[in-house]
Amino acid sequence: MKLLRKLRCLVVLLAGLTTISSTQLVNATVYDFTYTGVFTMLFPAGDFGVNGDAMGNSWGGNRTDIAGTLSYDDMTGAGEYTVNPFLFAGGGQMAFESGTMQAIGDGFGNPGDLISAHNWYNWNGNYGLSIDIIYDATGFFNALAFGMTVGDVISGDQLLDLNSNVLVSSLGSLLPASDAVLAGPTPLPIGPTPIAATTWNVSGTGIAAQLPLIADTIGGSTQLSGPFAGLSINLDIGDLGSLHLVSVTPSAIPLPGTLWLFLSGMGLISVRLKLGRSKT
Image (cartoon, rainbow, N blue to C red):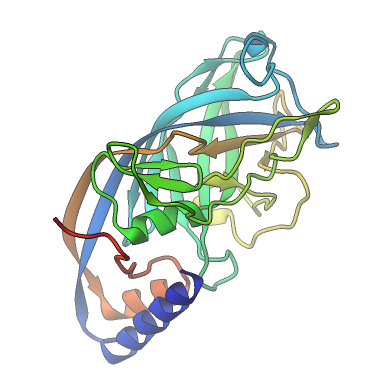
């Protein structure tokens, strides 16, 4: 799939060069999902910030199970996501606004599988707290490239159909940045995740101000102020049994040739080959 992605980017660039002054009629598809995932708070040393309101879960409160919705446009690379509110650390509900996402290639102007996500959340009387996470979405993009239909499920590293038959046994989903963190001597791995938080940090708040990326060793979004200043928030999307495709909306959008060339060259959009799925 890596080779196909490289070939696909080359084809897009060549197409752009031959049509730089024309307008392209681009076939875009919007995919709508429901998902489950994992919320993890990390201290600067990399250890867990325990959620006392979730001590009885399978993570012992070191992580918190989350759920929400996600929408993604495969041509513009833009998306939106929600996180259902949950109780956190005795301060009431952790309530997230509707977040935005954007594919950013490798984050340095080249093709790649990174997504930047921006959101605001409210907790314990604190409002408008910012969260910016850089994700590796290799598994997610490979599932879309294969060709998903309503009812399919991206489950960790696998793509399943409506009846839980395996369509793709390994999507290349990466381990989240917090996967290896220990609770004392106890490992609490999440496993391969199609939209996995990385150790990259952003330059500024909001999608438009995030680049260039900054190297970091702690997973998720480092909080610069507020009640969790210095801590890092991770929202990993699509753990085992998650990312259910609930609707697909195709559309054709006009895109100037110059914009097509620029966006594809930056890795923000791509033409995904439909691989291996039989049409019956």
